[in-house]
Image (cartoon, rainbow, N blue to C red; front, side, top):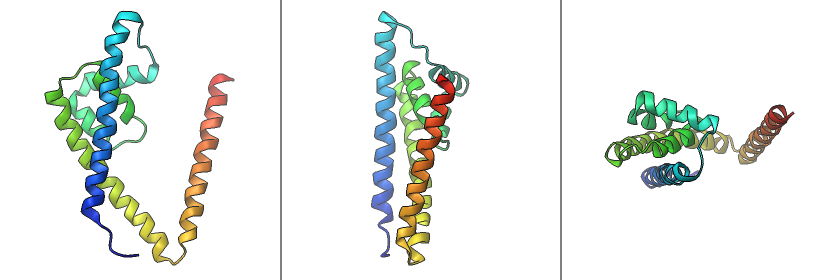
Length: 147
């Protein structure tokens, strides 16, 4: 495999993380404005995200990028709680830098490991297995919650 264009990939991942989390914040901010007039936002996962943001403030936004499964809740909660942009944007930017670094290094390591072994098909098998496992776990959790 040829050398990786690390800086362009890193910049791309930063933009992706910044855009996705920023959009989630904007949706939360808008939803709180509408919900305040019409209905209550009362999802348990959103309440947990709001609790984290209330307790730790903007640093929670930065640190949520190092976790799996709470990024959306924390960024949406930051929007619903209307954290000022002057505090949210720097926390978001640092978090996006961290997230991009982790995903870039881990991603390159995984691809290089499989590509370097001269068995690129093995990477596809592993990715398919991970995807099927995720779908199965999600299905089982939904059945457990509803049944």
